[in-house]
Image (cartoon, rainbow, N blue to C red):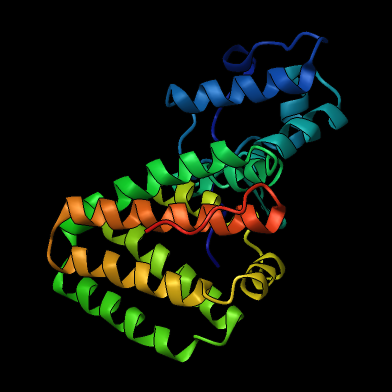
Length: 254
């Protein structure tokens, strides 16, 4: 039976006592500082709850509040029967709360699409210079599959997600990939997407053409053409979404 990892040896001198004001926030800040300075590293096990209570000089509810906040941030993870551990600190883990933040800011429509435009344009610029032959084969396979979902909004939504995810993978930047994922999912659940396709029957065909242009530019290793095609694609998505929520009756981009 594998031995459990030992708790990281920390003491009251390391943490120092926490003042009563904003106790939970101060515990969070102290543990984050220990991670930033290397006193705690990815995979380290935190001391048992009773020791942390004594070290910080706080109550059990305050400690648990702080640990929940750290868990939400993706910094600390609890393991059943094994205590609390510093997470792998991977960028995808640490940026996961971005998805939740974006879900709370749907009214900030223009900022969301401006952000998506900036991120996805940079992604395709990189993809056009970094795509391997295997990546190109994957993209061509995804584009070919579009013909099977022209009358299937949910099937297209899944394929669309695969296409954008593949572009992020080719770009090879975990932070860009996580941000792009959060922005992609902003307000684009199945019900919303189905509403858009019912009000705009040409949406799937138009997005299919957009995807094909983006993929062709990447196959040709032409970053500037890839940027142009992605900018047009994001603009078309923005306009179709605007029409659904009643902000605009503008035609799709040419």
